Length: 191
Image (tube, rainbow, N blue to C red; front, side, top):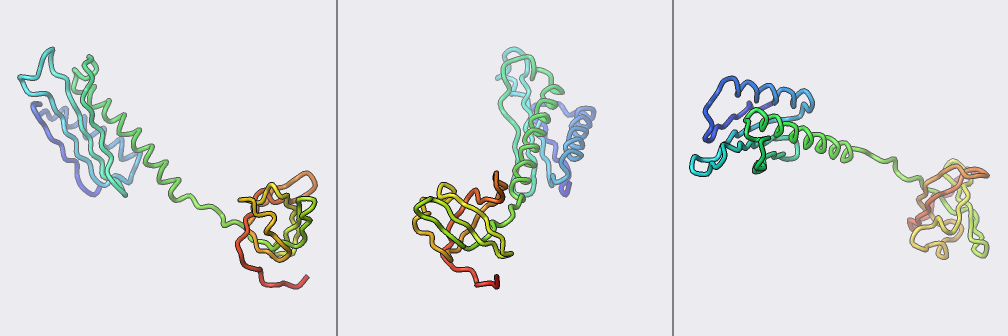
């Protein structure tokens, strides 16, 4: 972590044992998600005049991560779960871990790259029968059906039209599962 742990106490008596418990939980998060750059933890009990049936502790965790900040901290439910400060700390850190898992998933999706769609040229087309063949840059022919042409563009296709396509293996060989016109012609290549 680039910035050290900031531990704040509000209406809670400072305790080295509790501080070490929080440091241990932060260390677990760092082992799980090494990209944490800062952490602030606030331990809070309501002020004396708000206490009705004993303290209901609140734990707020702010984690600085690349691309933003994750915050864990809600008003505690009126149950016995948050009447113990250690239990409240553990519950807050479990929620922090869930948020870090979500952050890691978002980052994985953000960096996931897709291969660029292949390009081809319409080699032959049979408009009355609703199908045609694409010629790939390496000279292969790939079958396509009018239903695989996006945005109803099949009637606008003609021999030489440039398209993007996704290829899959059909019953009788390669076929294009999606075809989208791109509006320019491929450079002619030798047969």
